[in-house]
Length: 179
Image (cartoon, rainbow, N blue to C red; front, side, top):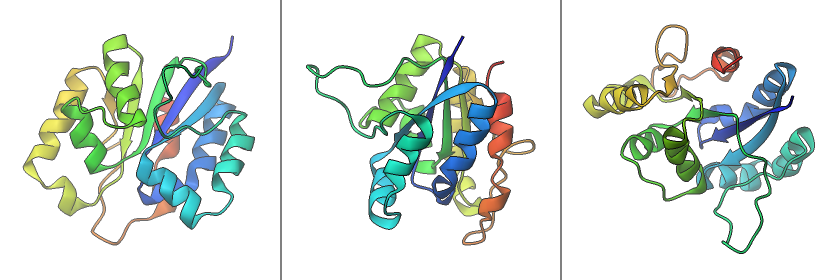
């Protein structure tokens, strides 16, 4: 039985390493579909020529980033689980307050209500994480059943401008997905 994973990614530096996550998820038995926030899509099309095509070839699915028209068919199979990685502070704030102004946010906001297992792996620096509302947003999502991998065993915020792409814990997120 094939399990479908929606990998929803925001515009943070680890988005440059999506193939690492896709391959790890595929090795774990997932059929991966990539959905990008509009800013992540812009990065992929303007800064990384050929990236969208490479992701589509790797997954066998179109990369989605915007809502379809009501008259258009769904291009992706329904998800059995969702991985939101990298999760930016911006998307965290909107998601925790039920804002659905992009396809990515609509899917993860709705995913909570549908009971779809969701794992979120943030990526932001310590200065951003220190804002008092960040902890509240994380708590809201955890209370809603989202597995937010922030802190020990997940993503530990780094000093501003000192992130290490090779240290981003993609495998911890894959391991946190339902078996």
